[in-house]
Every structure is written in structure tokens, then in C-alpha cells.
Length: 582
Image (cartoon, rainbow, N blue to C red; front, side):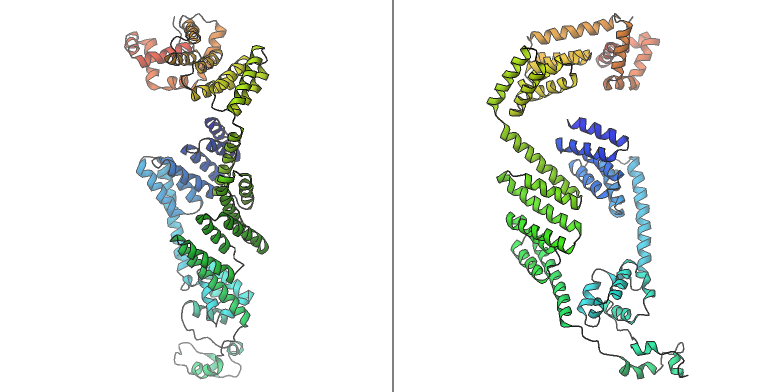
């Protein structure tokens, strides 16, 4: 099943249908969650759609499952490049080259990543060349809110907009230096005391009274005008209203409580972490991250109901405040995780599935998607367990047997299918359904059921007779012969298996003797050329030389025939009608 889904995914990828490819690879992953190749393929599909976060998640999973597979690091490097994490991309490519030093895609990827990293470093250096480049970091707002001389500026929209622009582009600082508020803010951010002019000075024309002191000639460092004006011109900062001051202080204090809670959480000191997050919530109810962080602590402590309550509050409050959709999605994902934990006892997976689906509508996160797949898988397993009833399965199988005797094959399939649902581990139901499919010439379905029968019970002879019969009808005589011979290892006296061997040998010898009609030969050759095994034999350089020697150098051909492996491959080509014996 997983191989089929993988093949569909590869075909969709090759056709450029990347969304379809992701769907098929996801289906395959659900069936084979430890197959590293599936995660690698889906990572490539996500990267083709520029969904690099999802591509990174799958690439990391690939490396986790198969750390010595070089392609996993190629996927990891590509995802990091897409996210512009050039340093991490370089590390990924280098790790891959440690495993496979001659891998050309890894070499090429490393060159690109190092070039991008160098270019990025130059860009950052250009920004950092500004004297004040580091002043506009994440701590800028806290510093200005904490200083009484700049706290009031934060209530002025034009000033806030100006500072936001400088956070993005520090080199724009020269555009705002004429603003006295900017000089005051720089003094706070850089811990410096700038000699700023009062507002009256800024408005006086330079030559309004002809006084040389007002013209401020160049290089007059000892000019006494500033010293005379200073006591008169420097006003005391006007205090802002008490409510605004307290609000800012509460938000700053709330942030400190959150950081203390994070530190306690990392130390597994959950009770202390809860105290800090609770205090942060009391100080500032406009940041839902305090609620989601406390919910995470409750989740770790196994207090799932408390976790769910905090997540519900975070979602409700987040929508009121129009918070970032990613934060709302995080709260829903955390709630779904708590519900899944509870579902291990209550077996109610529906609520968890619904919650994860809501989270994905807010933000499509690979981790949430994986949790949704796990929940759906758990629900399916639970339903199968509830439906499991061997007694009813036996009754349905008997009904199917009766329909089979009456040649009512579609009805028989319905009963056998119900029997399989009631008892998925019964090889007899698969064997009997395979016989029905064979009668209806639904050969691929019959082959799948026969293989499942053998998988469930490798010693059950019927499974081999069913599989061999399907392969015989598909005119894959070599494969049918191998199946019958494998079955005889478990039941050497089984007459059906012996008869199957005899029929296969007759057909194979018919080709060896050249007794096939032109139509039969043409059909067998066409079928043989579709067989991957035949294709591998024909593209093998050694076998190509053997075939050439058979035609041109009989003595060398005789030496080749002494090799059992070569002889076996030649026999396969003869059976497929590719090589004819005259």
C-alpha cells in the first residue's frame, strides 16, 4: 500500500503536480511512518511549492530516521536555504559530504549556501556600519518605556512610526536627527547625554538680530553661547499621566514574569513556572502567549483539563484582540494535544481531530499536521478494535463460501470483505476473496489479497496457490513457478502446488523450444519488456556482453553458461520471449 502511494507521489511530482504529490506521500507516510525516503520526497514537494517550513520539518525527520543517508542532508540544506538560514544550510551540506564526499548535489548546494552566507554577512555588515545600528534592537521599547524622559514619546504615533522604521533600516537615522525627540531617545538607548537645544532655539532664525552668537560659526568649540543659554533653555521633562505610566510598567513587568516562567519551565520547576505565568496574566491580559505557556506547563504536569481551559481562553481572547493567527493556532494545537492525552482513556479522538483541523485553518504547521494524522490513525485503530469479532467473521466467511459455490462471486466478495473487517488477521478470508477476484479476472486485487494471506501466515499453502494462479493468468510464468516452489517448501505434497509447477514448466519449455505462435511470441515479448527484472537484465553491461558472445563467440558463451546466475537470467529472457533458442 505504501509503495503504491509512493509511486503515485513520484508520478505526480514528475508531472509538476506538487500538491497531489504531497497528498500521496502523506498517505504513504501514514502507512509506513518510519520510511525515511517518504519524508525526503515530501520535503522536495514542499520545497517546490516554496513551503520551506514544512520542507524543513520533513528533512529533519528524514535525517532523524536515517542519519547516514546523504540525500537527507541535501533536503535539509535546501530547506534551510529557502528559509534563508544560510549558516544552517552550510552545516547541513557539510554533514552530508562527510557521509558521501563525492556527492555532486551536496557539493553544488554547499557552494550556493556559502555564497549566500557571504552575501548575507556583507549586508549585515553594511547595516551594522551605522554608529547607532545596535540601539534599535528588541530591547528598545523596554528601555524607552522605563526612562521618564522618553516614556511619553511612546504615546505619540509619529514617533512610534519613526522608531519602527529605524528598527527595519538603521541607516535611515539621518532622516530623523533634526527631531529633538530622536536625540533624547538616542541618549537613553546609548546611555549618553546629548547637548540638545530647547524648542525655542529650534525656531529662531539664524540672523534674526544680526548677533554673531546666533550664527554658530564652524569650529567654535569654546563658544560660550550654549553655556549661557543652557540653564534657561533646558526644560524639565513633563511627567505623563499616571495611568499610562503604570500601564507601561505593568506590561514590562509582565514580560519579566514570562521570562522567569520560561526559565523555571526549562528547569522542570513547573509550580514556579505557573506562578510566574499567572502573575504575567494578571499584569497584562492582552498577550495570549502567557496563557499558552501556562497551558504547556499544565500539559507537562498531566493537568489536561486545566491546559484545555487556558487554551480556550487564549483562543477566545486572541480573537477579541485580533492576535497573530499563528498564536491562535498554537493554542488550538496545544488543546488538541491535551485532548489526545485524555483520549487514551476516553477513546474520544473526534474532539482532538476537530481541534487540530481548526488549528490548521489558522496556520498550516507541519507539527500540527502530524498530530492530526496520528489522531486519525488512532481513531481508525479504535474503530477496528471495536468492530473486531472473530465469531461473526467466521459466519461471514461461511456465507461467502456458500455464495462462491453458487458462483455468486460479487456477493461472496461482500461477505469475505465483512469477515476481514471483523477479523483482519484471518488469512483464510484473504485467500478466499483472492479466489473470487481471480474468477472475476480482477487480477491485481486478487494478487494483493494472496500476498496479504501469505504475509499473515507464511506456512498457509492456499496463499501460494492463489498467488501462483493469479501470476499464471497474468502470464508471468517464471514468477508463478517461484511462488509454487516457495509453497512446496511448506507443504511438499500439496497437489495444487505440484500441478502449478507442472503447468508453469510446460509454458516455459514451450518458449524454450520455440513453439510459440507469432502472436503469442509478440505478446510475451511486450509483457516481458514491461517487467523491471527483465529491464535490469537487459541493461546490465555484463549480460549485454553475454548476449553478444552467444551470437558471435560460442566458445565464450559456453563458459558463461557455467555460471548459475547467468544461466538463470538467460532462462528468464527465454521465458519472456526476448531470447529465442533455435
